[in-house]
Figure 1: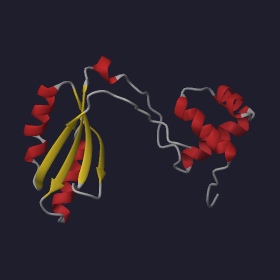
Figure 2: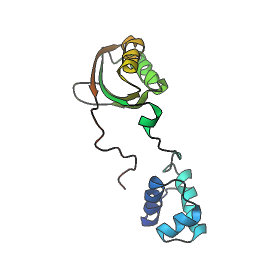
Figure 3: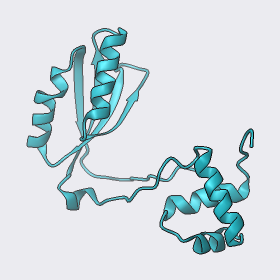
Figure 4: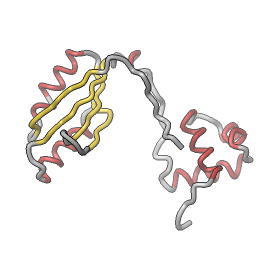
Length: 155
């Protein structure tokens, strides 16, 4: 298959799996209006073609003592390959970093972190983030409450 085409059935499969990745093939097939074998083949094609990266469980962060969400606006002093590579490698390696985006505007990166509390954020800030070479400015916004948290893509 040269290029996989996302038709209506494939989009229905993706929508359903985003809501519940634990659906059995039979349950999924029923929800999308297909028989089980073609549905299973289509799901495998979606996996093989990279539309489904992985399956995961969504956990309740507060029950796991991750009550503080911070959004960081990070500016680098230089945009040399070594500085950028080091910063991005550290972001990928840091367990507390949930998302990191290179952005346009007044900062170079937006980083979302989850930690237990302000003490944990203080430790992360002073022991990791501010010690990274090339970080010139770091502004933090603390989430007061969660208005919307969605993991499903708008298909």
